[in-house]
Amino acid sequence: MAPDPHAPLLQVRGLTARYGHVRALEATDLTVDRGELVAILGPNGAGKSTLLRAILGLVANTGEVRSEGVVLPRADPVAVASAGIVLVPEGRGIFGPMTVAENLRLGAYRVRDRREVERRLARTFELFPRLSERLGQTAGSMSGGEQQMVAIGRALMADPKVLLLDEPSLGLAPRVTAEILETLRRLNQSGLSVVLVEQKAPLALELAVRVHLLSLGRTVAVISPDQVKSHDELARYYFA
Amino acid sequence: MTQADLVLQSLVSGLGIGCVYGLIGIGFCVIYNASGIVNFAQGAFVMLGGMITHVLLVRYHVPYALAAFVAVVAVAAVGVVLERLVVRPLWMRKAPVFVMILATLAAQIVIERVTFLLVDDQPKTLPVFLDWPPIMLGRVAINYQSLFIIAGSLAIVGALALFFKVTLTGKAMRACAIDREAALLQAIPVSTMLALAFALSAGLGAVAGILLTPTQYTAFNVGVPFAISGFIAAIIGGFGRPFGAFVGGLALGLVQSIAILWLGAGLKSAAALSVLLLFLFVRPAGIFGAAK
Ligand SMILES: Nc1ncnc2c1ncn2[C@@H]1O[C@H](COP(=O)(O)OP(=O)(O)OP(=O)(O)O)[C@@H](O)[C@H]1O
Ligand SMILES: [Mg+2]
Image 1: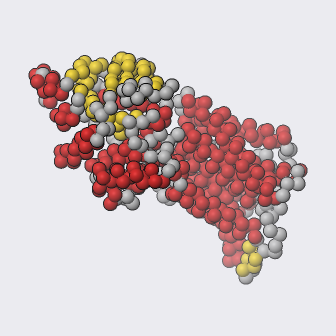
Image 2 (image 1 turned 90 degrees about the vertical axis):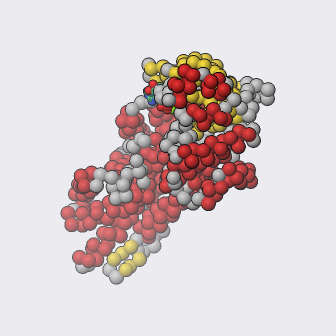
Image 3 (image 1 turned 180 degrees about the vertical axis):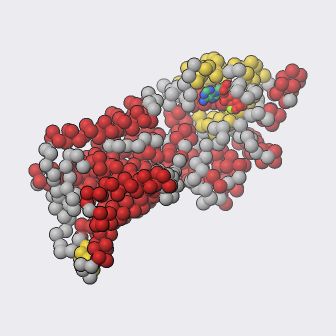
């Protein structure tokens, strides 16, 4: 099926995921249009990571995931990633023993054209100048914030249609988190579509056009960021 | 010959056989890193390398170099078939690792038996690559085949190091070994890398068999002892570290040759297994520490 340029970049319908007999995600919908940043909030164990992993096909799941109208297979992460749905997983998933340069190069694994790789590298260094100074360093020896930059930089090397980020601020100092989120804002403003899972709700709300609230594997509400802030109970729940 | 000459002579031959153990050990590591599986059919690759070359050379009068080349390619193909037919179906069903290891042992036996039926049970040898008189270092004779084994192994280890360090495919294979899921997220076709690992290991095993057969012999049943030696080499080097395995192979070859000299050939395997036990007791992570 040919891609439909008017269909959403990512459209998830009735996605259900399970670990063995435990259902961790129930019939979830999610739509991301061009240039949108959608935030996913919810308490620990709500199923946020499971949602992202199910979209990629990393956990057993049923339902429908489309990109530009094209149905993506449900158990083939390579195919989903190749379609431009790129996940920066919880814990970053960098290749620790390899150098920064190698990590970045592998992000563009499917690209064999040297000049295209160079172009993408240049764009990545514009966002993360620090990476260009550390190309020969083993990624695992970098600070947490730098490792997150490697992870996001590597994902950008794939030239994603939709960038999925699972708690990029996890374990980072506030100042480093702010730096990372500022980069995300710039990326989003330049037109990149993003799905952002965050525990630190206030940070995510500043960037999002829509917020999905997850609880116990279900979407309990899809609202605008303002609604979250003005909703007393939610505010207490998520900002406590 | 003086005792010192004998020792030196043993060490030279030990170095040669050690290189071969090292190559087999690397084969174990490459597959283990890609999959977590210890492939006990590794010895079958060694046997097939020598055997296929022998059959092409002696029965079909194919030129030696071409026969060796065809043998390496054919054995690499056997490696891929093994991965597709035996390992992948189990992998897809998320079978426990030990089941897959047992399956490779079964494959070893099948390959052994099929070779027995297609060829016979007689030991076969190959001519030395160069029929020149040995080089004399004092009273120590170094035959050219030993030099071929050592030089050939070093060249292969060097090429392998370059492959993993420089090529994108090599980097992708390393990435799969480090974090398979993260590799998937970079759209690296992990299952293709697994097949490639089997092809690479099988090709390495075949080369080891071809290098070694002129100084020893090959027969349908030589695979298991070779697999055990390569496995020990990998343990000594720290399982999952290809270049550690090569060093481990050298160490094992040297210890074994000295053991043959002082204790007699009958205790060769006992010496190898003693080295294994020693490492398992004293330093289970090997000289360089296990990769995972
Ligand atoms: N590998 C697993 N095996 C079994 N259950 C799992 C597994 N991973 C997650 N779960 C369960 O699935 C549910 C959702 O987990 P998930 O990791 O998606 O939550 P989350 O919203 O990302 O939480 P957090 O904010 O802590 O990252 C939880 O109940 C969790 O215990
Ligand atoms: Mg999570």
